[in-house]
Length: 364
Image 1 (cartoon, rainbow, N blue to C red):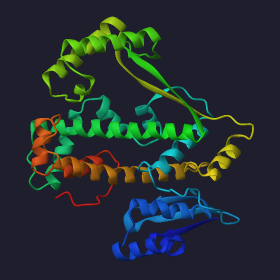
Image 2: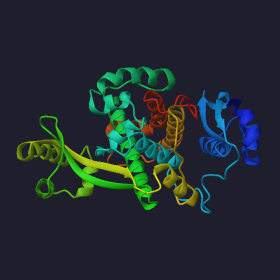
Image 3: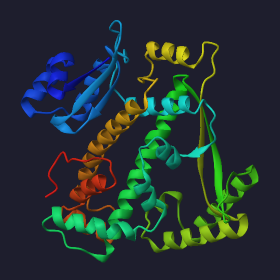
Image 4: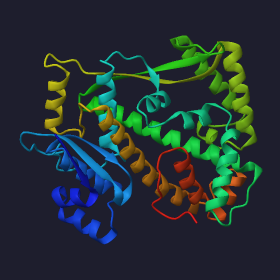
């Protein structure tokens, strides 16, 4: 059994007074309000599929439950200290492990994000490939949307900034979710040091190799008069020299192109079986998640996460735009902040890399 609802119909049937008032006032719901509404929907339906955007969304609810169940999240401190999109990210990780039957190998955080469908081939292509291929298309979009924008050769610095900040943020959120899933006894998580060899083979590093990397890093920091915290100042000449020599020594001494943290996760074993065990943990309420997702439901949940991430990402970008004295900013990034084009360009970059298809504000 399935039933289609418009957003207005869904709010009328399942929304709280606050959600109804919000829809009446704004004609739409925020990402957070919509997610809360969907949790209420899951008390009566097994799954849902969302199509469309904003107020024109159509929500198809599938498999009505024999009787209404309690809300997934029963914590008295609901919402406090949560990551943006934590419910979705928890659920996507658990669903992925179930789909893989717990037959996992260690993966980098970037690879995890790709496997979960949060980062797609367009962003990974820019991350690991030639970024200039994307720059011309982006500059064309900047010109169309931002009236005062002037094309510059060093616009690549803004693309670099977006990729660096976004990947760092998403990877940190993912690792935080791993830690929370461990604390709630949902998964076992093990972090290992891996490297990519000059022959493009990925393997776990030995203890001696890890010590050698630390020794090379420490020696070079001293040689260039740097502290570990200085390495984020990427335009500083000493940092550039450090990074160049560090990469050279990795290749010469250890035969490595780079190294990274790899994450191995499996759902905790239980005599109850995976689904019964997860059901008990969910009812316990220490962590907010759902499981048993259909392919359509998982895809829909991924899109909800990306929209929430985008909303928060734009908010943070607007905050960074006001900080024009950040010493790690490149000349182009600093210039864009002064001209108040940094945040509008950030919104366009989110759209270009398919994190969102609509803007919450006008980047004019």
